[in-house]
Every structure is written in structure tokens, then in C-alpha cells.
Image: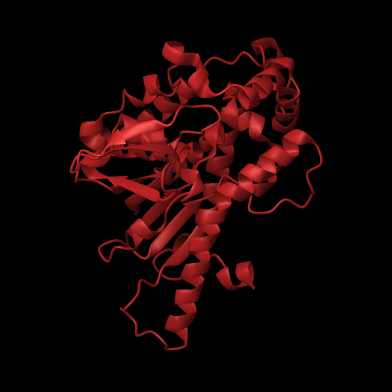
Length: 344
């Protein structure tokens, strides 16, 4: 029997390579159908590559498109850590620490805190643009295949904006991945009204947004691919650790709010306060590797080190294999995340 699921893909910069591995492993399962995708930042890039690839060449086409995307990400200039250093630092924690304290990275961080991305004038170009503009938007925006939703944050009113269908473009995906300390706000024109708005990273308001997946036509199961640790046992003490945890808490807060709302609805349905069918009874599942993500830092989010990308992909495949071993039978049957314990 085919298992129909929705995917909720978090953002997290280059750590989105973990999601690459998750999707690569899910594509091995012929009896798992992806009905919808909601993605933010790196999750939006992964979602666009997945959907366009599925429509172009089925599961193998999706795998090839994801491989292409992350080959491109790994080819981005990395001045903070030379190749010879990468070869001698195979452990992700060592790479993360070495990168975070490398002269190139720390200098870039200092400049980023003092210099606005608008200071570059005509020399400025979003480094992701050369990748995103090569997506096949005829397929990304198609009504066929999985429904696809891209989340961004409106700079002026602070509200979430969810792009779908023909509203998805190079600009809307760049908007979803626009960290305001690094990139200029991305302006996107509404194709229906002609109004132009400025957007920042969707992680501030929906990382990713779950509510687009509540449509009655979509399955009840939402599989969240979590790449920002929900919990860290150690209190951060160094400036990079503090900044990293601030980012994680900020980017997880919107997801936690939506999960709390789902848990509230589940309680209302369970005690009969709401009749079945009146509200969506969402079943939440999660694929994550918090142990690995706790070893990494904001440095490896911002600098796509090829060796770390490869390790993240393999970790994503491994975590998904374990999830399927334990819970594939539960898909379309029961929830595998204990929301009551999470918010108790």
C-alpha cells in the first residue's frame, strides 16, 4: 500500500545537505508518495530541486537534480578554509571549530556586523542567484506533482508570506533564503496585484510553515526534516556558540508554535470538544540527527565545506533509513512524535 506524506523542510544554510540525504533515501522507497512540500531557505531550494526533478525524470530525475544542486553549493567560493586543511580535518566537529576560529571566517563575521550588505552598491550580487536562476520553473511551478510552498518573511509588516504555483520564482526562493546581515532584502512582485514587497529569510516566521499542508486534499501525515537542534544540553559560552544558539532558537520558534497548535487541536479532538472532520487531525513525524547538529556551528551553515556536505548527506540517509525501519508502518496510521511530552 502506498504511503502518502507531506514534507516540511527546514532551513539552515549549508546544513540543508542533511535534507539532501533524507530526500535521497526517501526516493528509494517506491511505495512512499510525496504529496506536498513546504520549504524555507535551504528547504525551499531542496524542495524546488526535488519537484522539478520528479516531473522531469521521476525518482532518478529528482536524485540527479538534488545532486546537481549540492554540487553547485559545494562549488561556492570558500576563502575561510583551504582545501589542504579540509583534507586533514575529516571530523565535522573539528572542521566546524577550525572554520569558526579561522582568520578568514572571523574577519568576515566582523565585517558582516559592521558593514551593511547595501554598502557594496553595484558590486553586490546574491551568491545564490546563479544557482536558483537555473531551476526549471516551468516544473517547479507546475500544478502536476507535489504541491509546493515556499516561505519568506515580509520585511515591512513582519508577516509570513507563502508562495505557491506561478508566484514561485527565482526571487521568491532567494527571498526565502535571505539572511539580512548577509544579503540585501529581496524584492518580489505580486503577479496578481503588481505590488512589490521586500522579503527576508522565511525562518523568522515559518521554518517551515506547516499550515499550507492542512488542506483537506492532502494526507494527514507531515514529516518534518529538522536540521536545527531543538535542544542543546550545554549552555553556550563563546561568542560563536552564543550566536549559533540564538539563531537556532529564533529559527525553531515558529515551528514550535505550530506544533503546539497541532497538539492543542489533537486534545480537542480526543476529548470530543471538536467533532472529527471539523479540523485537520495532523499526524506529525520528524527526521533529525541532533547529535550531529550539536557538533556543528553557524560557521558550517554559512560556509559549504564539501567534506561536511558529504557527511551531512550520509547522515540524512542514515537517519531516514532508521526512521523508515522503525516507523514506516506507522505512516498514514499513527503519529510518531510525542507532542504532549514535548510541551508537557
